[in-house]
Image 1 (tube, rainbow, N blue to C red):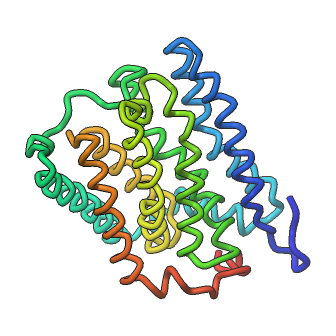
Image 2 (image 1 turned 180 degrees about the vertical axis):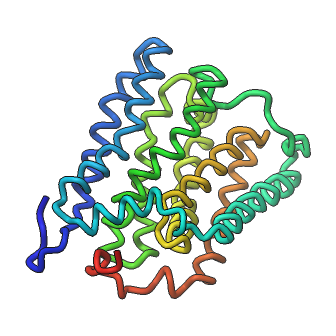
Length: 278
């Protein structure tokens, strides 16, 4: 991989996203037309792509600090600021509660506080759906936090990094809209619900960047938070209409977090020098 004149690794976010999209979508697009069981296998293989690509880029970078940083971010339990992780989990739980309560104004029911019997993602069965949710929380974060976010953040402040990452990460899910049995496909009953999914990913990008940075760039912290969010989105009986309300609440929470952590999101000391902090 290329290096700068001073020998540091040259981050290449465009290359990462190009490869991540390519090696995800070449499995996900055929999954749209494949029999259900084969489609599930193709979907799971595609899910691995960002993590694999991130790891390969880092291992072939020629940068020992970058390799060491990946190891520390994955297995460095000491890096995790658990109080911050549980705070983030509490914030998202509060977002869900507020969303359901606000939805009552639009004719929705308090029954949404119950757990669903099954997962929305049912294409490969309940057990496989749970395994996929867990796998997604683990594997996705290896890709997105192993290389992706740093590769963008090395060139700009974390506010704009979060905005760009959220948009690109959201669109990465696009083929799932057409794969039978996925959560995203269940939203296609109303195009507004599908649009809401993609819009909501942008403010969520800010929240998970916050989790990442306040835990000293720990992938493990993001895995735990991501797993909680996926589980709540799947198992809490929120209606699609309430999830549209939830997006508004997430935006409000994001604004509060950005204001509270203004120095973190807008500082530029790390720009061009991120590798020096490893």
